[in-house]
Each structure stands twice: as C-alpha cells, then as structure tokens.
Image (cartoon, rainbow, N blue to C red; front, top):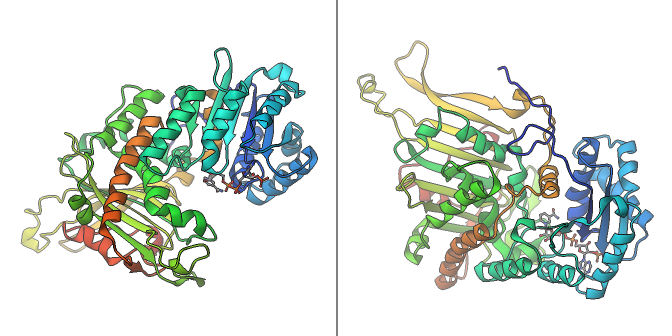
Length: 517
Ligand SMILES: NC(=O)c1ccc[n+]([C@@H]2O[C@H](COP(=O)([O-])OP(=O)(O)OC[C@H]3O[C@@H](n4cnc5c(N)ncnc54)[C@H](OP(=O)(O)O)[C@@H]3O)[C@@H](O)[C@H]2O)c1
C-alpha cells in the first residue's frame, strides 16, 4: 500500500504544519500524584523530544507535601524512566526540560497559596520572555476543580483580555447532570468557555481522530452510513483489569459514570454525527452534541428492557486471581455498583431512526480492547439460495481503537472449489501502514490546549447532554430496588443478559480478534 506522509509528528486536525506552541508556563495542580507521573510529565518530555515545545517554557508543580525543586525534578525523572512509552529516556532532553521545572508547596483550598503562586509566576527566570501565558492543569481530585478555579480567579489568574490563561480539567467532570451544571457555572465564572479544556483522553487517540477522516475523507463509506444500509452498530470498551486498588473511587462511580458518560459517548457521537460544516472545533462539537440531543430522555420502561448491568464474580485472568467485586478492597460487601454495562440506544433522526447502537463496557473481561463494529444489512440471498447458501452473512467494518489500531472490512467471498460464500477480512493496520511515531493521547491534548485548539476537548453542553442520558439510566436503577446484580465470570465478555440484548433482534456481539485467537 502506498501512503503519502506529512512531516509533522503531532499535527493539528486540519493543518499539516507542526503546531507553534507559544511561550507558556504550565502549572500542574496535583503535581506529586499518579496522573502527573504516569501521563503528564512523560507527555511534556515527548513534546520536548519532538521539538514541539518552545524555547521559553516552564512548568510549576503545585502540591501539598514539602519538596525542593531538585527533589521534585528527581521524582519526576524517576517516574519518566518508569512510564515513558519510548525507551531509553533521552537524558539530554530530560535534563534540559527539568531545568525549567519548579515546585510550589500549597494547599488547594487556601486562597493565599494562589496569591503566592501568582507572585512566583511573575518572578520565574523564564517569566520576562513568557509574559502572562499560563496553562493551569487540574490533575487533582475532582472535588477541588471548582475551588481551584475560583482561587485562581481571586488571585488574578483567570481569563482576562490580552493574556492566555487556560484551564485543563481532568475527568470525571461532575457525577451527574446537576453537579456537572454547577461545575460548568463555577468554571465559567472564572474562565471563558474557549479557555476551558475538559479532557477525555480518548479524543487524543489518533484512531479516534481518524473516525472523522475515515467517514468524511472517503467517498466509499459515507453514502452507506445510514439506516438504509446499516443494520446496527456495536461499540465496546473492554478492560481486562478489575478495580485494582481503586475500589474507593470506583464503588461510588460504576461503569456508567466512569466509562459510558465519557469514553463510550465520545466514540458513539463521532460514529453517528452528521458531516460538520468545517473541521473547526465548534462545528465538530455542534454535530456531536446534536447526536446526544437526538436521543429523547428514555423512559424507565425502555431502559429496563434495553440496559443490562452486572458485577464480576471472582476468577482468574491470564493465571492471575481476581476477587469477586464485592470482595475488592474498599468496596461495600453489599455493593450494587455495576462493573459492566451494556445499553441499546436509538437516535431519533433521519440518518439513524430504527438503527440500534449497542454500547458496552466492563472490567475483568476476557481481553483489553476498544472497537467499533458497523454491521451492514444482510444482502439478498436470492442468487445463492439454490445452492443452499440462503443466509449470506452481513458485511461489517471493524474499527479498532486499541490495541492493534486499524480497520478491517469483512465481506463474502467464494470458497474455492465450493458453491458457497464465506466471510473474509481485508485489514489495515496503523503500524504497518504508517511508519510514523504515534503520539500518546496526552501529548496531542497538551499541544492542543497550549495552542488553544478545542476540537478534542468536551464542550459544556456535550458533558451535560451525556449526563442527562446517564442520569436516566441511574434513576431507573434506583427505582428498581434490587439486592443483588447479575454476576459474570472474570475473563468472560460479561453476563448472559448482555448477549440476550442482541439475540432478541437476531444479532450477536462480534468477537474481538483478541479472543478469537
Ligand atoms: N491516575 C490516572 O491515571 C488518572 C487517569 C484519568 C484521570 N485521572 C484524574 O486525575 C486526577 C488526579 O488523579 P491522580 O491519580 O493523579 O490522584 P493522586 O495520585 O491521588 O494525586 C493527587 C494529587 O493532589 C494533591 N493534593 C491532594 N490534596 C491536596 C491539597 N489539599 N492541597 C494540595 N494538593 C493536594 C496531592 O499532593 P500531595 O500528595 O503532595 O498531598 C497529589 O499531588 C483525578 O481527577 C483523577 O480522576 C487520573
């Protein structure tokens, strides 16, 4: 296959020129935490390595425990060795970046700390050349998001004309519609919406961005992308791990809030949206929101029939023992938190009316993978019925978001020397199709936030529409008053009820390659 490449490592969605990141001070709140170590610092390192950071750049880490700048740099260096996705770490690049990293000790709920931070920002050796260009990254527990934004505003660090003061907010964004609306109001009282970057790291994945190219840069698929030709769509985000020590957080969240509201809905809206007027942020985000708005709040009756929840029982995956969910650390022994959800949604618009979208996600499943399957209507079998082959199988498109990123098409072909058809696969693999460096999601997202490009971040109305739907499911569960949830075996693909959701329409979940092997 011949492919022409752009030179850029991490291009913005619509330009092939490398992005020009302006001189900036990035302030990471929660800088001694897991996310900073695991994702944020490795992402900054890779941007530096790929010459995507400007000469005038600095990072301040804000956290509670006492630490000198050198101790902080040392900790981050060790984390980088552990978590960098390219090895070995380039020592010269890291040393150069680390020389511009500083530590600030403060309490997130102490307004005075932000005033001292504002002073420190003015006095950094890099500040005269950088000016007031700040990127504030809230890598803290979500209950500090609002406080932090308000304290930044009180210290004169929120959005103001003539400056670039931007705010990145991690997930989870609220825990229901009401709290998300409140958080939006608080953030917007300090920062302009264009300066708020709500992270869903799925949008930073190349394969997710490719959905837009795949759908709208090809003439062969888009004409088929509607209810006339598509029978149904399946979207799966499967995790092989259990809650792994995060029981305290997870038991409050559950699969609907932790995964459906954000990652699954991102894949869903990009798959179902109409062609945007242009590739600018607002046009794309308008179309994504329209998909969610085209789903009227489902009734409890509809949801009872079309949503399945379950918990994992104990078992083994790959020889490793996993306790039953209720036996996990910090999980209530009578917990009704779902670790698996499958839902059938229907979009009430001209393109999709009558086409079921099946979304599922779960923990402790047979394999770790994310994929979208577009399943087409069965072709008429009239020509082949005489030879007994009267049930031609449906064509499908498998879009693999991770791992083995790529796309495959399944179609019927004649079996040699036989008068029958068999489904065969034509496969495109990202890593063999493109010899490019594939940036990690956080690299792409950081660059976009630094240049003020919002396409890959979730807008306030999108977050709220997603919560509206998730709230309707959770309200229905509250009314159900059950004492136990269905269990599924660790290492399976969820409970039998999830299979039945599709079987009643004569369908089945398409097995991922990971478990076909
Ligand atoms: N970890 C991940 O892979 C991941 C993935 C996706 C999203 N997230 C989200 O990212 C955020 C951070 O997660 P995390 O896993 O990094 O959490 P974490 O490991 O618990 O780190 C929390 C950070 O916040 C600081 N902190 C806590 N209370 C503080 C206070 N009162 N004043 C000042 N600093 C305070 C801690 O500093 P001290 O320890 O010095 O007190 C630490 O640096 C959360 O919203 C999480 O949902 C995390």
